[in-house]
Image (cartoon, rainbow, N blue to C red; front, side, top):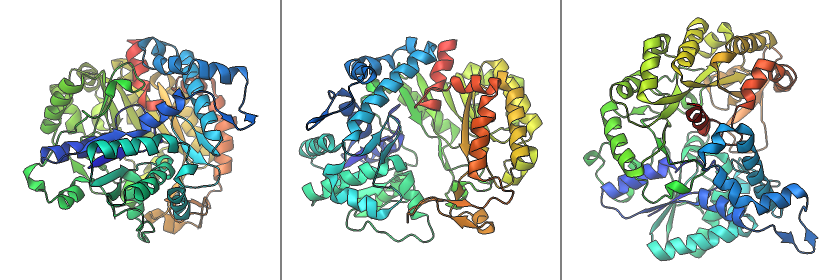
Length: 513
């Protein structure tokens, strides 16, 4: 079986999902090969020379020429620890690489960068556009690469099944172009489509499969159960399988060493937040015991020798954090946590630091208690304040997530969030600022008059008439003209690594030590 990660998604680390499937299949004696065509495809475009389009030359400005001339140097910069001591040097490398990708995509009316793929005429939330991408794979800017690479993979590994993992909208159009090519070139090989985005689509209550002619099967949720059925394997014989990263070129990802992604659970243990997509999709929480996590990490660290562990859980549990304190992995790590009571204890935060914790991502969402209560976050601002101070004193970086425009928010509440951030600026290393999207099939969506963002049958979110008149336009204006202009907040935002954001932020924290 071929396990394929298609473009475009941040190429910062190996894809954990198909690594887990590779580990599962090999533990059961099945032959498979996992390949990150996202990393390979982006590298292929970056390494090509400045293109020409017939008699019309592409931009010939100094920045473009310099970007292409120094393209390999820019990629190598991201693999040097020295780059992570200067955000301006880091940003220059990112801008150069994005400029190259922008130029390479322009001849196919595509907008490509290190984190995203868009097409001027096709939208990944329209099934008709995805089918068009599959029927016309030559229109995709990655076609020269993936047509050659997929043929090589089939010739070398002789698979009878090809699995495409699509977790983000930014991957969908490229994935379907690849599937269309695969269907025409290798009609006898079964095609399976899975991943987070596919799971979200299949969880829609109105789902009707428009892709029957393209994929033999669509997988909802973790793929191990489907693979067990497909290959007649016994799930009970292996309750937990260590991911297998052997197929991936771990040292070629743009980082000063191997970053090891690891999931200790599927889903979220809290599942109470209003408007949460996990809640709307009724996803099941599936944890791995802390003891098994320790055993997994010991094996993976010995195999991959990482400089950083990325816990990919929606929220790391207190039990897992305590296990890491009691049995430190011996490698720096970071992940997403809730504002749990344990963080109110300065000794607990110091113990986390000693265990290797470089940074924690924390979903604060709002600095207004009324808004937090409406979201059922179970966050109290006085406790959040204490947690941020404790983490800062312990030397643990904080990446704080804010969400503006929720139904209970108005400008007064947004300004309270602004005041909270300003007051706690010394304790906040990085910020993620987002505008609220209403999940289309959430329970809360029934309470508002909604209208679509775009004309698409696969959309997962909808616009709504805000009950307080605090619509997206006003929120965006507030963020641009007021919130981001506050000196203390602007200083935090300037530290955020462009493109890779939270994936590379802990590297800057490690470099500061």
